Image 1 (cartoon, rainbow, N blue to C red):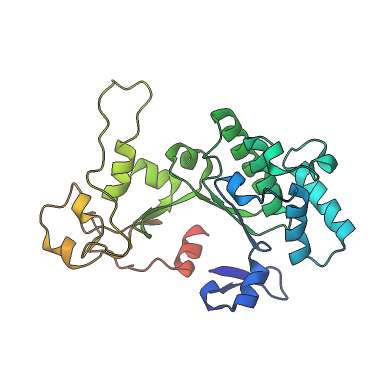
Image 2 (image 1 turned 135 degrees about the horizontal axis):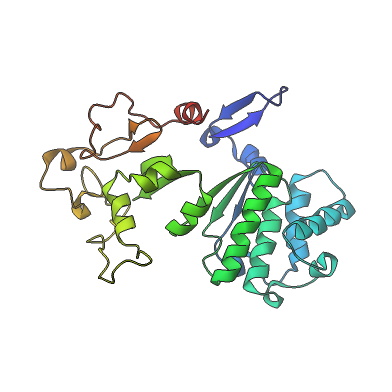
Length: 283
């Protein structure tokens, strides 16, 4: 879902992105919704300067002259902490470090002032120090601009430090949803618990970490019933687990899970996780 602003800037109208035409989606992509990919070297075109690549996004989505676009690009580089921004517009991606290339990707994504930023593993290829700098930069820009960030990551430490709301996904679907405090303090789904069990704890006695048995299933050939049941510690031949895929249920206020073994799952009255419900739960 996506919110469009009508004549009243306070009145946000939800719009189903899947129902929009390709022409309308072109106006939204990169303009209202932007994305940072996990590997900037494969996302940036090696034969164009970083300036030309930033300008392309600005000229495509904003009604500005090339000179105005250059000013916007320079300011975008300044905003992400790149010194000597004017000269940096003329360099090629291979002439920059990994951290600098990731900052270029952030500048390109934010040049059009998007409402939502999708960050797909934005720190994967970076060392720990640069990773912390990039995450701090994203937090700073999010606060200054009031935009939303959807962070896609496997790093639970990054989630704990940066997220407000967490959606845990398995086999292409959400299996648990809630505030970062609820999910970390009381993980409900067996897959979520398995993720936490596989993390080393600082200061704890050294022992072999507990892993999740088996392998992730082929999305084109999911097991019948709950996709996680072949790997689930709670599964003991339960017919219910193999008969039907459990929908998301609100187990406690604002905390949802998709598992027949979660206490209160069958008794819950709410069985659909939709935008309207989420928005109401966050007010």
